[in-house]
Image (tube, rainbow, N blue to C red):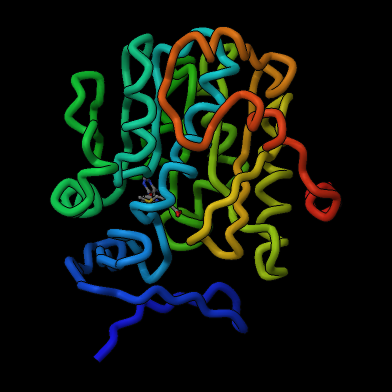
Length: 280
Ligand code: SAM
């Protein structure tokens, strides 16, 4: 009998992937964790039946979470990643020898253990000497930090369950405080296409804008996320995402990427009118 993974993308739309093998399933204190193998997308990780990553398209998401900010901020030394237990964001960060410290704050140790066992493609750099893993709630961790990180990347689940508080004004305010004076915050949002997400997207944008002097959303095409069209948040104390992009410097670093480049960087911030209207 054929096995299919099915995910509801809206009350009227379902997305499915034919599964070759169900490799891992576990219910932790926080969520149900599944890892499956498929012919089309390779291995993939779901949490509470929501797609987190597939081996075939995770590079798009992880590169866009990391390199956009790294091509803007000229001197990132300390980075905080909240969520991101699969290791994909950490893997991209370790491509920069100039980074001294990467703190990964993941609420659910079982996600890290499962990814180390079944998804080495993303978890491969979690043992890097610069990486320190904390198994605590990011909401709590951030409260104790002040003027410490040059870059914070919030690679959380969507705004419900354990990730809900990571989209609030109180949390963004604490991130502002935890950042150094020219620090940048990057976070993932939802797809803007289905109307069910409009209110939470608008709220998250307004909350970010209320805390940071420079706030913009940017976009990428991620085939296995709802509608294949995804938004990211860029919030900054000083640097502008386009005016302060140092193309020449970033290109000279010789960082290997499959999606991100500095020309695409500019286009990623050019949002369609319907999204500009939604966010205002
Ligand atoms: N790319 C993914 C997506 O599609 O949404 C997100 C990656 S996934 C590995 C996000 C991680 O955030 C999960 O492992 C989850 O346990 C973690 N997480 C959720 N809420 C958190 C919180 N409050 N503090 C720290 N980690 C959290």
